[in-house]
Length: 463
Image (spheres, rainbow, N blue to C red):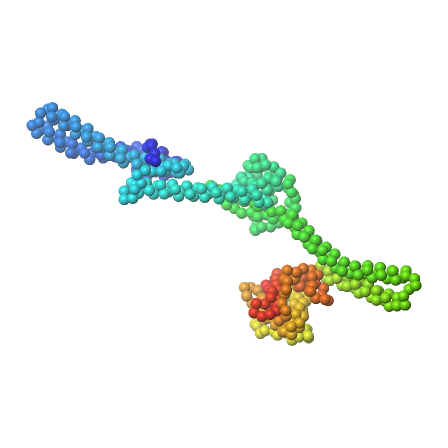
């Protein structure tokens, strides 16, 4: 549709005008067009009038033709003005509508090959592009608001004067007040000033704080952004206490499940044998071999009691792992020394450049003893071999211990405490080894080999 022409709107106060075009120095554009259109036809009209008055025509003919020429001249001049000014006013109205956010107005007579038509095409395309961008921005804003409202993380936005400008539902619950009562208040009034002050010194950190809607340990993150040219601060508070409590509860459940399983394995036969022995003692007359039955029963009770004692000792060892004492270590020398302790099967040591790391010699030795012993146990089942190698990559040393055993049937329970597939295993070797690796800032993984039958343990330690 073609809009109704309106006077050109005044420029906003921020628009810079050319002094030469300011009112009072030059006439308006419409008047200039009018003057130029009149001036374009004035010579021809003046010449025609001159020829009519001095060409011997009658006065009636002269006045009639002069009047017709003047009316025709003025009509063409003012029509030319309208032809120039009207499209410009239409463009002005369309651009003003775009500036106001109304993208429904379209310009007519948009045709290729015509100068004004091509301008209309570009303006229409601009309106369509702005409309698409606005829809995308509205959808993105709606999505952001939905996400902020639903996430279980308190989000606050403060302006340069530390007055609250934005808060989500989690923030409202944390401060136990609706957003209408929170917006506009300062961080000090809301009790969030310590979070902003502490966050100024660096990256994310944790703080122990009490709020009307919750208390505990919080992960504090702060960042800055600009809106309308002014700097704002974004504060994000995450409740770590709930996560820690859930992890602690999960750990206790796993521990109690393992403890219950092990205790039942030992107490069930003890109870059964004790009941049998009690029946044997009350039986009259006693069987001739009741003494042998008593000895065997007491041996079973003693054996299960020793097993239970070893289990408790293993748990204590796992729970009391001391902090590592770091010192320079030559990884090659450490691996050769540990490999020499294994006498059941030769352990191949690959040649590699010596690498120096910082670690606890005793703990790393225990870790490597566990891994090499497991590898030898697996290889002896299939009469295979064990190989050890190391390399340096990406600021880490990678130690690989490979065996040619049957491989891993199930990797889900490898690092579960007290889980073992060996008849005489305690189930803490791999768990203790991983704790030692993580205490040194490294990792420990076990996977089946892809190039050969067997398993490979990969120990990564920082240089």
